[in-house]
Length: 245
Image (cartoon, rainbow, N blue to C red; front, side, top):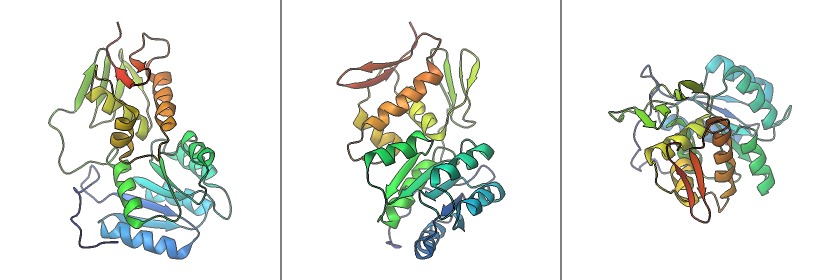
């Protein structure tokens, strides 16, 4: 890891303390390297080597993001994620996986994971992706003056992360929130899958544009079902959000 590189904008929790990251992996050497890299960022880090230890740590430590290995000695990462989400249903999770099959990657995201990296990976890559996840849930040193986005009867508060449509509150995961925020910041503008991947996931998803389709479908179920639709597909071009007609 290049310790001489320029450090990105500082992240901090609402109370001004450093972000907390939980690293879950049974490979001790890897855990130590990740912990060192994340602490260099100024973040508070705790590690766990098993699923049960990770679930306990998540409840005690209350991390702002989790780097979670898919294969642990006592249970798989999907089960760990499920148990963590029982305590905190919005915690961002980055899966660490040795599996390279598209089906495995999509399975983790479908189960509620927000992102993934495939082993072997660089420390810079993990740091960058955790930073991208926490930008959605942890305060950044520099904030926009206007935190309220409104399109039609849909409202999103960037500070409190509250979303309502027609006065009804809508619960979103961290990734769903970031996707909706991007759409609402560009109302009536057609956004390509590539643009959405670059903005929401902050990197090229290796051509896996179906991840965008997956999360658009999640949003539609929460935003549009039972109402006049706001999210529209422009075939061969991308997606657009506009006030319901």
